[in-house]
Length: 141
Image (tube, rainbow, N blue to C red; front, side, top):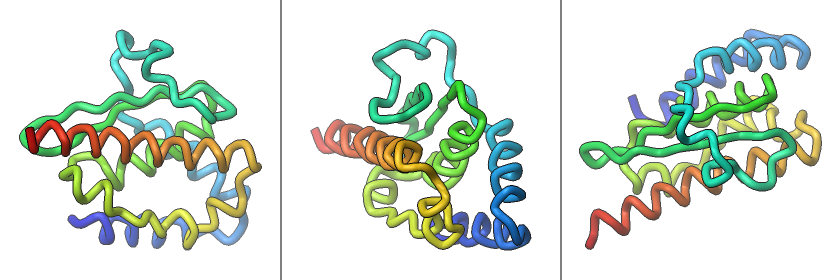
């Protein structure tokens, strides 16, 4: 499944819900499925700066693909990082770097987050793309 197909799947899942309270509840449910980061990576080195809540993100590079694990101390943030991992994990670095992640706007997530959570979302995306860039550089050396 491509990034775009995964994004479309998420858009369809969110379109079921009319109101944002239901969408938030779904987001919280999604957070329960986040691939949890190993406890040894729950350190400040893996903490994403710019997030209102604490979010740890780790990436492994296996057979040319990037795999993410994460955790957060906030349930909505955990749901957000789950969606990003669902779309970006298991992809080649170029795919991650080039991903527009348009689904975030289509489902209305960006407009329904507080400014600090919205900044946190941008920080998560930035960190995931940064990991991809680092792995891409390592591949070319």
